[in-house]
Length: 155
Image (cartoon, rainbow, N blue to C red; front, side, top):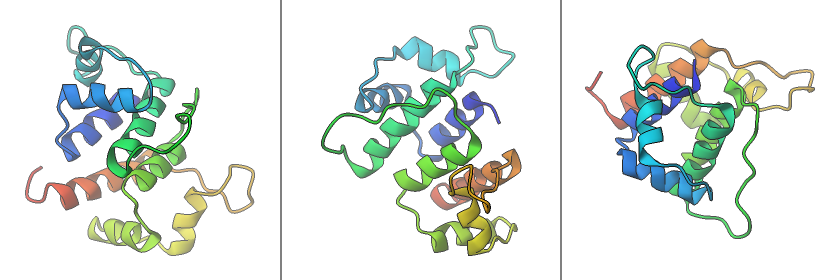
């Protein structure tokens, strides 16, 4: 999945307006103009489309954590320069305050049963012997499960 796809899906799931996305970036202490957000949200083949960098998505997700859970004391989180699906999954889990049982239930509703052990492997450090890379299909199913949970009946 591209960073733009992830941003578009999160925007749709939580019905975020462009101005809200700009405000979310501000929560992460980053300045982003609304035209840039609009360019990121366009389809790949639309005129004016702009590809979203990993650092921009990491900044958005850090701001999204603050947006959903409240701003933390101290300095803002430093956004990662390289972002993978495991990190995106982890940031969404933190933002939505999801426990393992909640995530397992989301995957079950999507027809993709996942054990607690399989799930915990996605959140381990990359050097750990039980670390498992989160493939696009897993992240896509998780986002689809969130969509079905937060916007039932809409597809």
